[in-house]
Image (cartoon, rainbow, N blue to C red; front, side):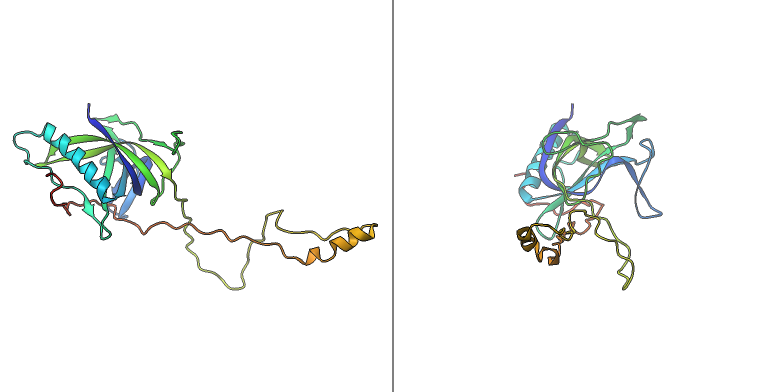
Length: 236
């Protein structure tokens, strides 16, 4: 059985976990597809700090060394991409089907271990733990270790942003505040003089409206993972 490993406290990038997706060359983006379609997969790219990347690389190297054949390269090439800020990115995937057999969908959990609903969509920028299986392989003359995606735990969820394609129109229609607790009503007339005096002026006070701070997500990261940025002496 392949070795299992948990990559902790990484930033999720373009997760596609609610169903299988395939990259469509015509529209230049990933689109939902049938699990048995060619290149159908579940995937999540992630950004990690140097210490996390080093620990992951050492686990991958150990799996590589334990399974390499005579024709394999003597050392595992570093597959991570180094970002300008010193972090590293990589990707974990699982195909929609292997040899015609549909695979199990990666399970998503919250921070307390509760299973997320099937329709849950993880967002870019969220902090997650990623459970993978280390799969050494030799394919097309290239040897490496793939990270087969098994499960994701959401530690901190970034709310999904609703993108508004429109600009403001001056003098146009605006929706009224529908909060029944935001508006104050005028005090009723009382036969008690003291009650009337105590209520004087309260209706002149405008209700206070709170402005919700809009959550933002980091700028889009590349959906493609390239080789490069090998860290010196990681395997020493």
